[in-house]
Image (cartoon, rainbow, N blue to C red; front, side):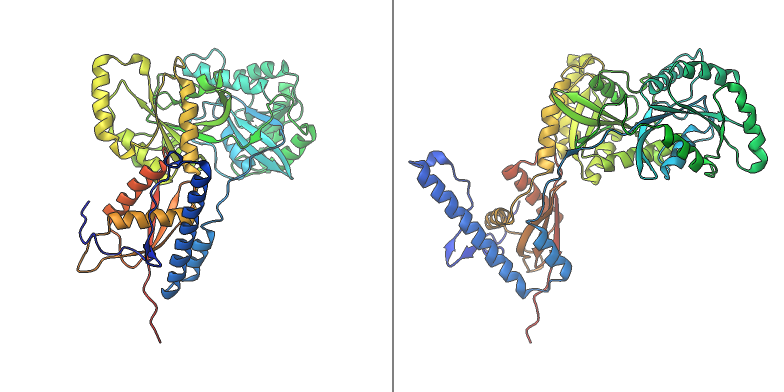
Length: 525
């Protein structure tokens, strides 16, 4: 970094009342007794407060708008969210054979396009839970993949997830295609449902008008009582179905675990077939999602509370991000959009990297996606149990060359298949989230700036040198700092400020944002 014009004063307040202010760290070991140490710390704190007051008063000479004043006032008002337990809502499972409109019905009940829908069978594979609300009653709705008898391979895994959803619910919506009528597969599903002894509602889907209602009457033959004719596509009859459903639902679930509002949300990201679903299953201690060698198995984001080393988290399994999202079609395209949405709702992202393969542009693009979202970041190098000495040497070189821009992110070497070192994720996640939540008081931040610009002032450009008038942290999650300046700070200098912030305050696992606002001096009248 150039130290051009290093003797120039950088920013108002570098000197107060003719006495140079030093913000060097103070160590208790440098003092003879604790009383002297505490008095010195308080003295330095008073100096920081005085510097901030002087700098703030100096801003009155510059053109500030209402938004500027609001950001400055909000600098010391950043707080943490409270995490409190909530009630345990009842669970409703939607089941049926493939392509009868289960996911479309889920979207209609939710009132938004949440589940991936495509006019081909087998789009949904996992059991995916959503929070729903009808007539001020909350309940959880579980979308499932199509159930088929004697299925094999990935279809068998999908059917098993649907059977688990039937076991872990309080009521069931059994969806049948009214245009096709009752099939042999539907009759096999009925046999499965009769053993549950839970309320079952027979939903005759695709009844788009009154003319088609007689087709639904044929479904009485299934022996599940009166069919409810609905159109998930147009919403016809769904309100009557929900009214009948609420009459049978308990106030609280008898099978689901009480939910807590507060476990930090962790998004599992990576390219297809990198081991995200395996990691979720191992952390949950159950086959929560479908795992298959077929790349792109997961399509809908799946939330699951998990406990690792005594700490509860909400893990979100996401669809693998492919090389060219804009060229994808159908379910894969919408799955990629759901992954981006899941990342926005998360607080920290665990990016899984397959150590048996070279770090690719695809991995780097996923990391950039996390950085753009402003979420905390942990890098998990998966399949570590398959790593040999030769590949390890290449991997170390790739990390040094390709991941240098995120050298601040915690790294964990794991095996999602065996669970090796899974417990090491907890300290990495806690460190990243603590940094993501960090709040630096305005006085300390301005003291840091004064020390930095005295040592390394901004280089002269065109005979002028921009000055930093005042700095404040306007938000956390991620830590975002705003600098009021007299001129444009070059990107290299802002990156230099970020590096020094990390040296002083660490921010391990969290991105840092440094913005600036150029303000002109008021014209004297």
